[in-house]
Length: 239
Image (cartoon, rainbow, N blue to C red):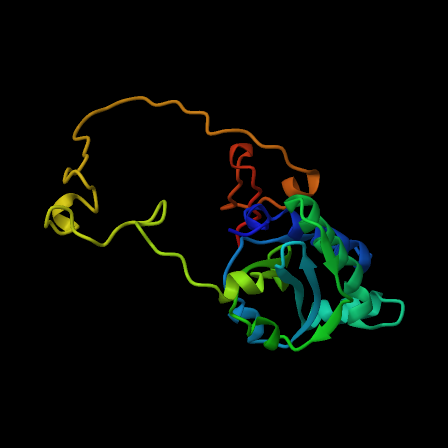
């Protein structure tokens, strides 16, 4: 279990990064973030530059927040920087993201200095956990921001925990009472397929409520998914 589990369930730090980067750009564009994903293959296919900010946390975990900027975003950021360098343009927004991660998780974080790095190399490290949020200007993909957290050395090198059962929410591949999944109604352990045949009913349900900023409200597009307060997470605009 990681100290940053709650951070991975929320896009708050990514929105904070996008807002800070928008202020740095200083133009009329409104940056939003897309839905979390595991890969950025469609972005890396083009010209991409990366700026990363490493941090360490009490407990031994380490992490890094990385901006992967497409050609257009990289050029705009350089133009907005006082010394016309991408590193200077991104450093403040990366620091905001890391501070938000620390506040959200309640973990004391010690950040390093931001550095420009190789985009593909930034994603090479497979250890730990990673989440990726696309950066959008309307419907245009400008780049993405990633959070990668590595476990403490003792946790990474220690013996793996014994598995005594299926993880919560997972479906066991083991047949029940010798029956296959198809025979038990798509994995239903009671072997019953619950079908309501020709039964009409009216259902009213309140799923929950949420609060959002004006920025988040403006970023909602058709097909967007919004997490409710009950889950204590904010999912970003679908892209």
